[in-house]
Length: 163
Image 1 (cartoon, rainbow, N blue to C red):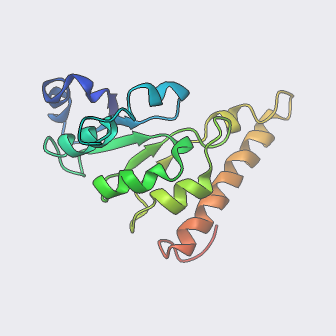
Image 2 (cartoon, helix red, strand yellow; image 1 turned 180 degrees about the vertical axis):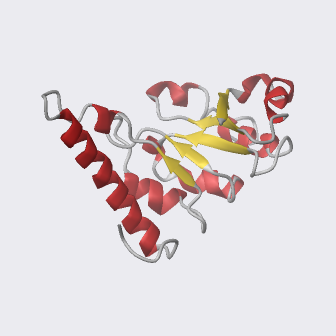
């Protein structure tokens, strides 16, 4: 179980969700939508971006076993900045496929020693085909993403063999 929470109202708006020890709290950090740059990349007087402030401050509220972050697959090399501030947290990564996110970049820049990624590729799978062949096309699309990710996990030494 998990709940996604916008952290922008601060600790008191996130803490009520953290009482459920068996559930994850997923905070928005750097999302994949185009408008994410309107606020999430805004810098303060010291050059710190809003998403960095969220990552730093929120780690005072919970452990990396209770909280993870949403980081859109379209963010590419920005995963390096995310991992600098949250090296051990899981990242929920939407946006692979139809939204334009690259699984290769996500794996290259976002994976930690344990993987640390929950990658979502919804639209590329559910809209794989509009005919009566939908089920087969969706299965093939899902398997393709799975095989690609297995390759990255294998290359990093996280799993012993490619799927």
